Amino acid sequence: MSDSSSLRVADRDREELADELREHMVAGRLTAEEFEERLERAYRASTRAELEALREDLPMGLATLQMALERRKAHLRRRLLQEGGGAVGVSLVCVAIWLAGGADGSFWPVWVILAMLVPLIRNAWHLGGPAPDLEAVEAHLNARRARRLAKGRRHSRSRGLPR
Picture 1: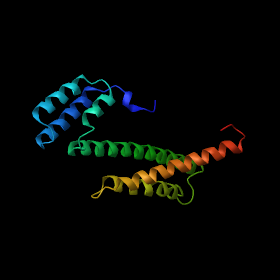
Picture 2: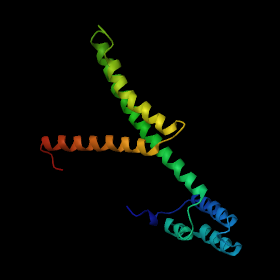
Picture 3: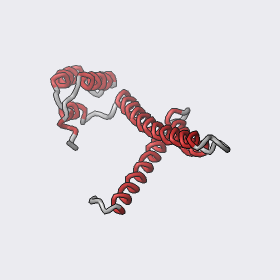
Picture 4: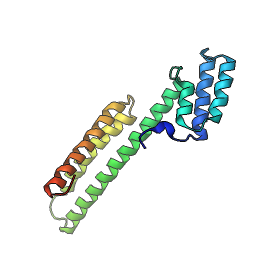
């Protein structure tokens, strides 16, 4: 389902719109009567399209912007944690190989660990540091995903598998 406008809404979605409508009324964009009418329609709404119709002639409110930013940050944090889980897995495999080989010589898995951690630390800093740069984190994660997908397609073609 690619059209999210037909998705059903939760009470939380209705409450968020109610808060946004209150913000617009306080700012003078809605009269008390318009606010009450939209509020009633908001609480009766069952789909995203119905909620969006109530805000389509209003600018995006500060509360909405902050909620959208927090959702985007949470999404990027989840993606970063997934990348971190993969890095930990690869690092543990390398350490296990080193240990199985008798743990002789230098601790060579440190180079794998560093190669995995540097991008994660950089992205974590961009995401949660003093000047968050969500675009940089998202661009880096999207580029890594695109490389993995391209590598997977090349691998499946070389084995003669259908696309």
